[in-house]
Image 1 (cartoon, rainbow, N blue to C red):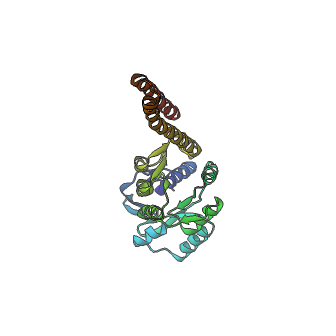
Image 2 (tube, rainbow, N blue to C red):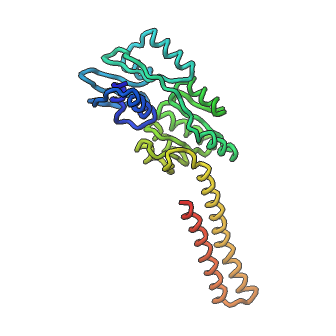
Image 3 (cartoon, one colour):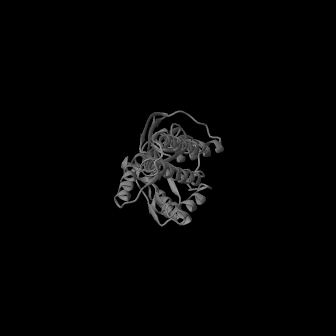
Length: 279
């Protein structure tokens, strides 16, 4: 845990935070890592106490030439069958240990998904986890469509595939791995405390650090849509009434223009006051 926490010390994604919290709970000594290299969506390579260390998925370790012993492979499969994931640690080319990651659903997610379904919107999970943990999460949240073992660049490709099907995509993510998909989606949402890359890529940031504001976001957009339609209606109808008054009711041009300006002045004021109240 001390080695893993040291390697994750410069990362801000949820797994890194979970490892840090576990290390703090165990009160293990922490130390600095050297020559840190992060491979997006795969793992971390570092040099600690003159030893080459790797921390990441089984796929990452295999790509780096580490052989997974049979008893470790069996433990990994058992863990995945329970719907959990493993972060593996290798030191000088040998597997030294593993950290089991159990997915915990944010308490506000169930209400957020219910809000989306009430609006006839579909929810899709795009995860870098193995298929079994992703499937278990999808079943827990009653989500039919999900993608597992997805690399960062593949997340963006999945967003594009959904768009090609005529779907408008709102992507929610908080990690470096999500940055490509966040930029490709029509609307992107991240959370306070997320990685700086995700925050820079997102259109909307929830400052509370959770998804409880999704219903409020839809409320704001609904009111903005209604207000915009009202403003457009006023800007179109008012000139027609003014012109009709001049040509058919013989109202003076100055009087008609004055009424038109008063209506226009009142319309945008209402629109602006509604927007800024919700900001």
